Length: 266
Image (cartoon, rainbow, N blue to C red; front, side):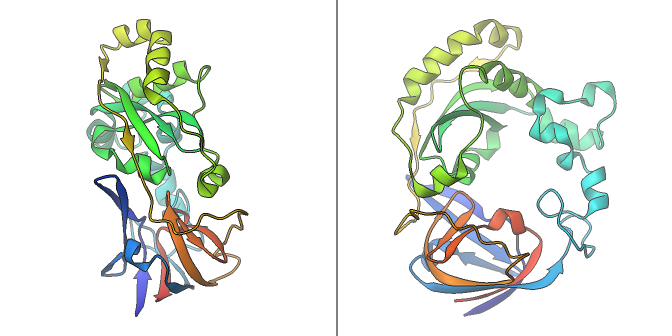
């Protein structure tokens, strides 16, 4: 089977406790779980089209945008990565209406175990997709707040007590210790009790969500594949975790290549 076209970040879902992946390439959607164990070839066709305006770009910015769009879209602003720096209230948001719709909605502060316990935030509607994208083996929501700014304030307050980043190499090797997230949650909430009262945050009693990935074999050594340097990549697909394809020839972060035009042979 041969497929070609512009790709988007893999869509994820959780079926019982199993992570499921679908890849959009051109007008086709591929069930990636069904390809695990098969030989695949990925060929970068030398074209990148901005996922917003559709214009060709020689380089992808902010994972799929041309430079002008990356400079003008609110979704590409630095405050998306650092929500505690939200400046919508100052009247300087790049797209005020987009900000109202996307940043002033319910957000969840959560704990996830991807390479160890970490704190994170996401829109309430993006659970459990955000956890799957990060390669978490377990996660638990801890608080719900009314805006992205508020979630960023809580996350910042928790950073002295817990990591907020994933070690992607450990995550891909599955070198992850089992952690009691419920106990960790209880301890951390005590550190931000005053702030949560100020923000009128809702404490959540959700159970821990466990996630299993379609992986036959985890790599013992990480070899990172780069389509910009090596346009043709092939190998047996041994698994998928996070937004990474785990090939016997190396690992590739497909999210990085959103908006690239690829040809995939299976």
